[in-house]
Length: 600
Image (tube, rainbow, N blue to C red; front, top):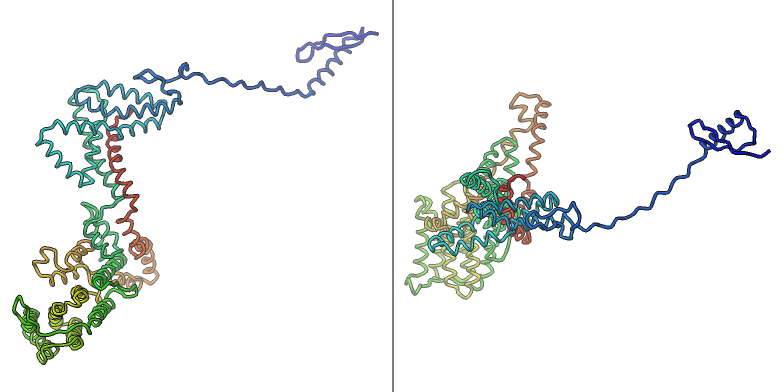
């Protein structure tokens, strides 16, 4: 029997073609159809391959309907380089031209400002932040304000031009003034989008210039503080002497306007328990650094410096005295001292030395003056009048006896005895002056030794003043010693020996000697327990609670940190200083432009 094709409806409604024997019943066909449908459902479906991707050719930007066009020239803003790059370039060009539009607004002409503003907005929509930055950079770098200024200087009358020139020279000397002029000038040439009449424009522009001038001044000065800090002449003088350590308050004292108030606040805090000891320790570091700097000034004529292991105070004083005596001793075989008559004044050595003794004792009380006269007669005048001449060794014996006597007297706690020592030092100075006059063959060596000796006298006197702590003197004590020995006239002129340096130190470092630590000892746990009637545990808890912030403060007032802060506040690499000077002007103009820009 032959097979035939039957059409049967599947359960899902589709028509299936089933091959079967001719004359098959409907039930047989329906069962075969269900079996065939079930087998089809289990058969995996082969995945279809994706159609190959067809890459479209880039459209011509000039034919692209989405291309943004320059609202002024009508040229596509991608310029064949991409829309972002083209928009950024166009925005920068608009920024360069904006100062012209800003200047035109002072004449009541607003069309250029509107056109350039429209161009800037269109560029920023496409270019985003790069285009916005290019606009600002273009305004800052634009040469047009300078061209206007040159044109103005050529058409102004001579008197006005002279005034402007004088003002310009004054402005150049002040970073604040220079920054203010740059900021206000940038704002003046920045276009203003203002609805209103001309008076409203002028009012708005005046406010912009005032704000921009202030910002420009702050930015210019801030740039200098960061890259090339301005160090006062006084601090520079101290650093040239070799000082490396200053407290935070002393460094802050160099800041204009508020610096001295900050330094006074630091001084005031030295009376605070415990915190005062921390600050006092920092001030002590700076004071000892100053002492060593003055000691090195003493040794400078001899070509020497203080060894690192010589501490400020009596140790330093003794070292200086020994070095100077050694310098004179080395010349002993080459010198002599006699009754020399000066051809100009017609006076003898003996007469001049008697005058020197009278000058040295004129301010002493009678009892002290008598003792000084007796000492001079025994140690110097007696040996000289015996033969009217002394060889090098004899002179050194007499002169050294005077020096040792003076050193002993100066170390006395009795002010009258100390005055006798200073009088002997004054005579010793005159004696060495005479020695230098009489020995020109070793004049250079004697002058160096004598200059060191004269410097030493001032340091020795400062270390002997009341309040000096074991020979460590304050800046104010050193100034007092230098000024008293220089005299009123030299002090008034600021030209006496060591006067400029000590006046600078007193200005930078403050007045007094750092606290010895008494305030800190008052707040130890034991002292607190006794003073306030606390238990030991309670006092210890209070002590530890206060110690946490005090430890933080202590980190600022130790030698390594003070040295680092001093270097950071006063010194910068050359390349950093030069870069800061170059950047200060553009940054001030940026502040002016940014503050005058209208929100978009």
